[in-house]
Image (cartoon, rainbow, N blue to C red; front, side, top):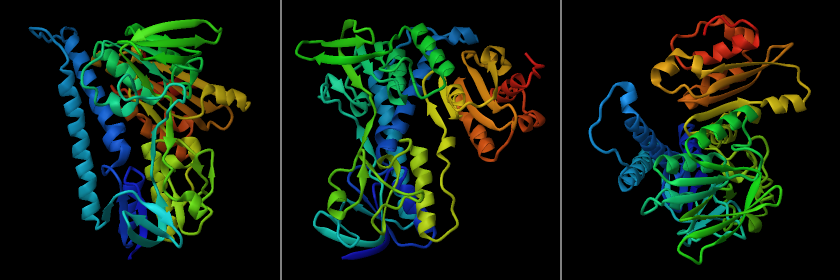
Amino acid sequence: MKYFDIIVIGSGPGGYVAAIRATQLGMQVAVIERAELGGICLNWGCIPTKAMLKSAQVYNYAQHAAEYGIKIDGTITPDFEAVIKRSRGVSEIMSKGVQFLLKKNNVTVIEGAGKLEKDKTIVVDSERYSANHIILATGARSRQLPHIPQDGKKIIGYREALTLPQLPKSMVVMGSGAIGSEFTYFYASMGVQVTIVEYLPRLVPIEDEEISNHLGRAFRKKGIKVITSASVEHVDTSGELCKVTIRDSNEKITEIECEVVLSAVGVTANIEGIGLEEYGVKVEKSKVIVDDFYRTNCEGIYAIGDIVHGPALAHVASHEAIVCVEKIAGLEVHPINYKLIPGCTYTSPEIASVGMTEQACVEQGRDVLIGKFPFTASGKAAASGNRDGMVKVIFDKHTHEWLGCHLIGDNVTEMISGAVLAMNKKITGKDILHAVHPHPTLSEAIMEATAAAYGEVIHL
């Protein structure tokens, strides 16, 4: 039996970060991975989808090149096979990058599926390994609806959506979270007739209502059919086309035919088959129960990422990994403030947010100042040719605490980090106004929105 200080099961953005940080702190570490290094994020999630969305953006620019004074002779058409190939290539590069980092940091990589056994032992293909600390980072997979099972051909999940052999003519997307909305935008940009169905009253329902409504208008303007307050009741795949039965909140039934149905109704934690029940690790609602430092009820067993309660986001898993490992190492660490987790949706326009929505502030009875700034008034946005979007900021009227920041527009996912840092450091609205912001930039829109909240608007 081989012994380590820490064994990590899973090599996604939680697992590989935990492993590398542990070796940096002087521990002997192994990672167990049953598939590709880098996990879902690098191979079947965050990274390949962004590569595909970049192709969609370039295609859009090419279609509108004349608006920028650029003349393109000939027909502009997407090469879908090449788009998919590029996406897979980007994922391969990033996965190899993780492999390099693990090797550079002397992390032992064990291929196979790991399962907990008694006394902090893990078995992998009949081989046994032991560690003082075991971190579970097994991630999640596409959630399956019992009445609409995925067959991988006509009813697909995100994996198949990343590798379709050919571009379909029509598609119904179930669910408008980040996954559903991003694939909706991508396939619509490629010329697919897309219908997106959301059970709740608006798209991206966790976002501020104004942001959600803005995305809905942008999608409809692009020719996407948006159906909210509705659910897909049944999909008949017996014919050449899928027959999708949709029921709205008024019990009205609509039938839509399409080539492909994409199920994007969330993810399910990978907690089966890893020995949790046998070991006695407590689980609640398909999530492993942990404390603020990701310790389970079993000594020496930890869990991070998509298998614990909290946002199923790559950057959350990575930060949980660092907190977990540094606590194991005896360093002084602080629990994550889950109220300030940024969220990003890479549609066009993009969405980025952190903190409380306006509705949440109202529900808590907060007396707030709200400021907004439209990108139609931004010189940088006008120059870029992408003026669709806005910035919305929320401050406490009495303490000036920055409560929420909500953005929709071109490249706003690159702007939210500043707001996250400021809110973590208790920067107030007044502090923002007293700082000099560069012009012309998209990011100065946060300052302009703040000025609007305080009635100090000067610029256009």
